[in-house]
Every structure is written in structure tokens, then in C-alpha cells.
Length: 159
Image 1 (tube, rainbow, N blue to C red):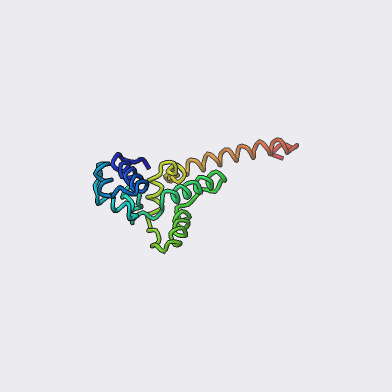
Image 2 (cartoon, one colour):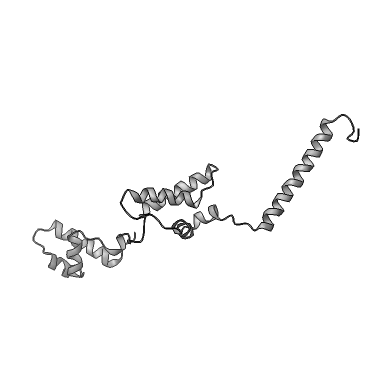
């Protein structure tokens, strides 16, 4: 994650504090022009808000990347992924951390957040479009059957 100027100065101040035994945290904060309280919190191990995962987020960035790669891999193998399968996989990942399971619309929201997955799940067709495709396939099938019968039958069809 890109660091802001302030975050970079905090890291520099912490590094200077660790390297120089005579430098105090207050003096390091003044030298690097950062807030002393923030520097003290970072020294005590509290992460910045930009580096923490919010509580409503079920997965970390790495886990989200894993789920995305899994979905894309399934799609390449010819197994179109289902939203229910994504929910189940995520629930298994989250269960290891004793968090609550994902909600009803979590998988749909996850797909909407990641544009590279949107085309893998969006195959909504109206009934008219579906019927038109079925009719076209049936017409092609019947034409092929007629051609094969003419080729295979030595006798005329009326006999």
C-alpha cells in the first residue's frame, strides 16, 4: 500500500529511535515533524488505520485474491462458478478465524466489487432470448439430421 508523507516520516522516526539509543521518542517526533502520540502508538505496535482490515470486511486482500484466482481457474476449466460456491468457500476461510459467516448478498457484492469477475457470473437472459436460441439450435439440428438421412439412405424417402 502506498505510504503517505506523514506515514513515511513516522517510519523514519521509528527507525532513527531504534538505531540511536540516546534519541528519545519525543525528540524523534520533533525532528521528523510527526505527532508524538501517533509515534508512541506505532512504537507500541498499533497499526495505522490504512493498514488494518475493517471489521465488516470478511477477507483480507490476500484471501480476496485467492478467491478471485480460484473463480477464474474454475472458469478456465469449464466449470462455471456459482455464487453459492463462492459463499461456501468464503465461509470456510472465515470459520478458521471464528468470525461470523458471510451474509446472503455477500457473494453478489463481492462479484460487483471485482470487475474481472463480473463477466463470469452475468449470464442473465430473458425468456424470449432463451427461446430464440433454442429454436435456432433445433432448426440447425433438424437440418443436419435431414442431410445425414439423405446421405445414409440409398432409397428415396417416400418408399
